[in-house]
Length: 385
Image (tube, rainbow, N blue to C red; front, side, top):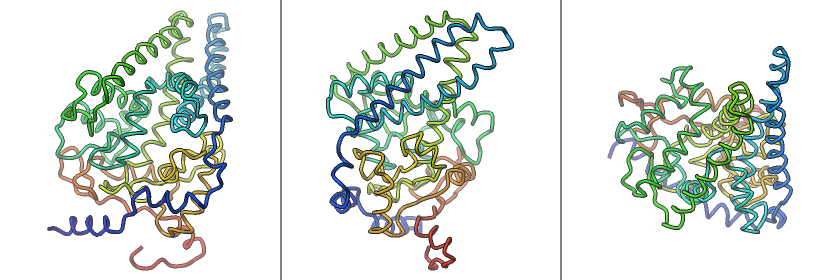
């Protein structure tokens, strides 16, 4: 057994399963933290309204003076942010923290995820069931590829697009605006066409039931019809489509991917689902926490997926109090820097490598909230920190 394997075994012995955090911290949170919050449904509806209003304005662009068309760019930016909020509000909705009526949840989840090309039945399978229960393990469909996995088109595209020490800035920019679509395409085609764990172009294939498979197929048809209807309402005009359809989607997908990339991709893999080990939380300006429903509190979310996101800060306080030194907390800009300084394929649970497999770079040591607090107070951390 080599030193890397010894370190991995030692770390696993120190890990705490997700259920233990939840069992200890749940009684310390107020009951209203787990009560439905219909206000988030209002947020989802408002952002759907922003998108519809943006398309309505865009439909008149052919009547604008040419030198006024640039004035639509701020609207496109607002629409792009609405796509981010639609995903995050739908994310909360599908976890059951907004309403309990399953029919309304399904309908609003469908509408909220439509611009993300994500069938709600697929979301429940790939995110709620697979990702949350198998976070950053060998069986997590959202993890990095392994060095030993085949160098097929799925792995090649991810290697080309994702932030890493090798990525070209141009392809990174392309990837920021399209990686969400690639992720969806990989997973949806995997379950619709094959539905087998032997599929090798996804990081970790999973299977769904025949009923789910049929639902995903019909939802995808409905989503495509809605997108075609939007394009039709814009008369398939290239300028209208560019400014009010493609540009907002590109902005929205890029914003979404910034959060998703920093959630887990720089963390080690583990067979134990310990959110403080396989996930990290980032610090962003408070305005963005308000705007994006506290999505930066990602470790906290993994401990309580169905909690009202307004209470994520309280979960952080409890984690810091009862599990000091475990919560990984880092500035969003620093998390991005680490992504750009490391390769993006797992050589083993604690080591990254590049496409060629020649590099061996340990997963970065992420400062914990305890370390940061001590540094601010001028307290030197112990040597093992």
